[in-house]
Length: 347
Image (tube, rainbow, N blue to C red):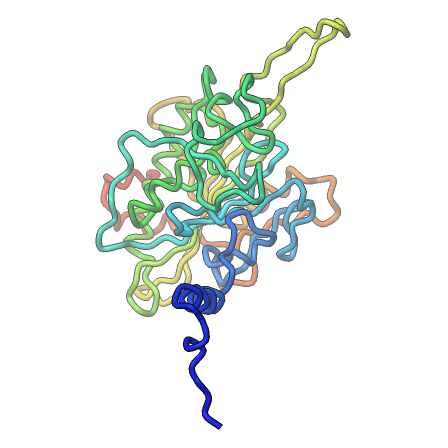
């Protein structure tokens, strides 16, 4: 018996539509930006191993999935870095990026447009971050979102400004640099701290990774995780008189972190081993222009963070669990090899 091609029995248009159906169905579903698990966006973590954050993220599991949302930050259909976002305090818990160098790295946007994450408000929304003003909102009078910060929250916010957790300077190309300007990667940070000792730390770490972080293939590669510890104050905290109850109501929307921390780890071919260190500082004004954040070990960071959770029986912070990152290393011993423009702490 002779079998005729399917196209012989279908009109041309129907046949083409059928071919298109089989073509697109052969691909897996597109992963949404707000994902269910950290493991869905683990490529930005060393060994794909999520940090240990007490009461929030333990053994790779988010303990309160209604409050904490993992975001595969996506811009122009490209995943750029990872954020775990606190929808109650409306600030990120941490952001993580894989540091590298492209042949054409691109420059920081001159006039960046701040963006938001549409899927935090509507799970069916587009996966790409969008400009704040383009997002449709229900509460147009307040101009705010239910599960994330908006530009309005940061208006008249002295002495704070928008502080990146994942800085644009760590991004390896123009797309990634632009994507860091999402409000889900931002915390209220004291201006002089943000532009002073914190900025110098970011510059120093970038210089260090460019010089020393080279994998076995000779490619620049490092992993950075930066986080914020929630405080007891809120941005633009104000009291409003409610007519009927003749009482007051605090409009607490965006938490002001009490402390910011950052840690990095990488392999160095030149030193035939792993390198790691950490920095952190209270979210207060720098005392002088000559202030620096001290370079310390991962264990030093864990001790300070664990002190904030003294009530827990086993308070265990670990930014790079299951890796070979040296917990007691302080990389400041390498700073004499870096140029003064790197703005590393005095050694």
